Amino acid sequence: MTDDSGISKELIAQLIAGQIDDDNATRLQRLPRKDKDRFFKYIEVLQQRAPWPEQILLRLGDKLFVVRNARNERVVKCECGKEFGDYRQNWKLACRIRTRRTLPEMLEVYDPAPACPEPGWQEIREFFCPDCATQHAVEVVAPGYPVVFEMLPDLDKFYRDYLDRPLPDEAPTWYADHTEVVTRTWASLVH
Ligand SMILES: [Zn+2]
Image (spheres, rainbow, N blue to C red):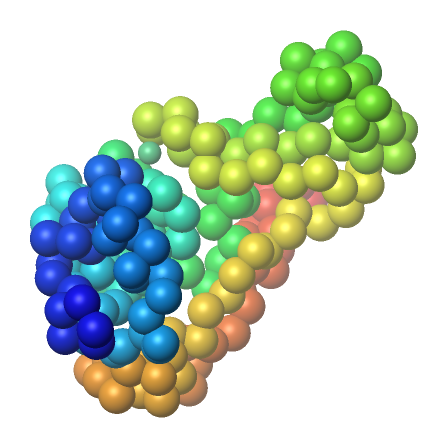
């Protein structure tokens, strides 16, 4: 395997499944640069593994994706099928959230104890899919800190400028943080 043309879809499938052998993993790491085609092979393998037909645009986590759904919306979707809403809104706000605030609560997940965050100054937030209970993220932040929006990808720019394959529904309005739409709705329910 001297160049990117030697990377088969089968090898990428092994990589995703955690079944790639050490030799091939090392050879992949040593390739001079990543090719555009490899991204699409990667997406193709993910698509074959997904239990639903919506087109995967990007993988956000082990079991979390940005997809284009049947209504031509770009949404965040769990492997189980649960949709978290518009990808421009922080998907964490559609999760079940467990917050650990006390030392005993934190010690359940931290070992050794000296590595534990300091209650009062920090809290641990765990984000779960409300349908399948997959833990999609954990954040350790100061109490009251806004829920961290880990990544708002500029999908149009990525597909157009880096992959040379622009998305058919390209529009300047896709790259904007709409999380406040969710929090504003919550606020209107309170008042
Ligand atoms: Zn799920």
